[in-house]
Length: 458
Image 1: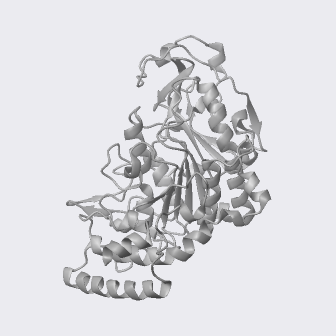
Image 2 (image 1 turned 30 degrees about the vertical axis):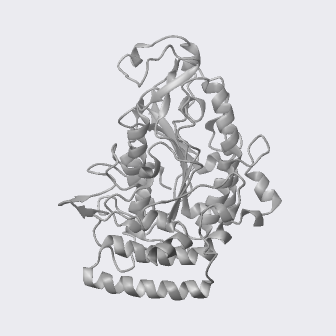
Image 3 (image 1 turned 30 degrees about the horizontal axis):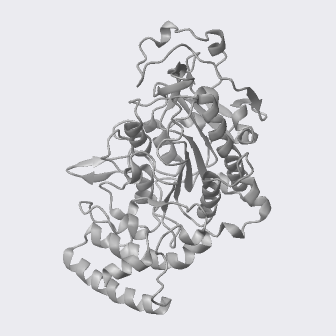
């Protein structure tokens, strides 16, 4: 009976029904709202993940010195090991303009996004530990280079709960899967209800197909409710005898959520209800709706309905991994992301949601200012850029800097632990106090480091 219920009610069970059996027992209602440590500036996060690693010197970190030293190999680079061998310095072919009243330098590739320069804080001094996709993806998501820690989205649900009772609190939108797959949004040793829920929009953008098998075609809602009540009664009796077990508690919560989602999810994904004007704003420069544009629109609809964390991965595998033809690839990639990002920021700003929503853009690392192969750029973990907007962020500014070529972070160097500490702080959480005891020790998202970047907080 339980198996048939899970099949009919669909895939919120994807995340939490298959929970980690080793997790410690959660509270009676693990997703209930919890009090923050102090007054938050933000309530939710939308993470625009350019998986593969976007080139900072072609987007948000202007380096005129690259043109002066074109083809050269300055001594500053000799100790900076990258994944592959690189050649001489390769200047960006893209024009940078000073945008907004703040004069923030932004590439022509992000012409529309640049309209929101005064809302954006560009962190140009990011760095991470390893120049490979898999460990760097884990680091940006969980604060560790191996698949052994919970994702930051799971930590946020664990610490704050969720406002939404009818949709998952942590949603991942991606056509296909990025490198590492579902391990990027895993709960690991946290209770299973805190894992992210992956949703893959079908190519026809049919909202009824986002979550397969969500509706039970054999039973009416009344019959399902009666069946579920019986199953939940047995589950709760079993749980009381077991003294609280994470897997069982997660199963109980997920079945209830799945039942409620039969009504809530189709409405949340009903993008056709948007006006033609709004929908067209999310089109790419080719005048068509892309996966990324649709996911940006859906992200806005989900945060409007109380979803705590929405991650949008650009696409399957690592599409921003421009080892060759960097210029041509960026024209296409930015062409599909520029207008949707601007539309998302504009929508959030018009409705007042930007004030309480952190928007984060970036990848797992950046790319070298030196050339690789056929006009490509190699991985660069020594220095790269991300930007944030909304949710208490001080807009119209850059923080940190790379060297004159954009290779190494040299000023106000920012590690993912610092970024995570700052994001938690904006959400009202002290990153040193948000801990979970597992295997005899207390763990936290920022491990034993991380500093809140107060300079970028408004």
